Amino acid sequence: MSEYIPIDEIIGRDIDRFICWPRYDDGTSKQRLSQLKELGVESIALGGRHSIQGYPLLGKGHAGVVLKAVKDGKEVALKVRRTDSDRVSLHREAEMLALANKSGVGPVLHGFSEDFIAMERITGPYLGEWMNDFRGDLRELRSVIRVLLEKSRKLDLAGVDHGELTKVKRHFIVTENGSRIIDFESASTERRMQNVTATTQSIFLNARFASQLKTHMRLPDREALINSLSAYKCDMTDKNFDDVLELCNLV
Image 1 (tube, rainbow, N blue to C red):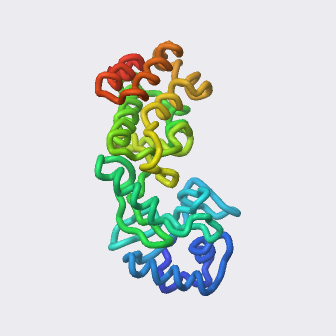
Image 2 (image 1 turned 60 degrees about the horizontal axis):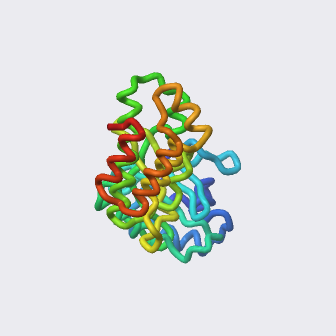
């Protein structure tokens, strides 16, 4: 287990650079530590499947890095806004995650400030990794995929477009309790909803992923699926969604 460092002992430690990454500044670091205290964050640790300059992290992206943290006595994932980000704060992302949470989608939001988002830490392999090692039965596979499409449908109905669900590698995680959608960094309520269409395309029409999938289950006819997704995109009814599920052999 990674060593958790109390907030008051962060300055001068290796993890301090990731509170203020990639352009470190003493004043900014101290100001951010004050935000963390107000959020109720007690300690922070390195650790995770990603890395920067040899340091392990839970995640990294265009807007921020993700660290392990303890808030109010509970382990959480802590997103930290990059100091070179073009975003003035993480407020918008937190608001999008809160909207997704109302539909039961995404990591549970535990609090946020200008430069931080504290959220549920979701553990498990990314969908692509899970498929590489998959040795289960067809029912398990169909359940994992169907849940992702159903969660995508909930986002469509909630009016939140995730924005990056065409990327299989980084936004779908398979946990012991089912599949989850993560990372609402690019989410918006101002775009046309494309969650179901993007998720379906990434799973069934992405050549690399589909080639893995077809060794375990029958794939839908490509043209028929494209037509079905077009119908759903034009009219997001329950029937059109059910038609997509049926074509994908998920009913």
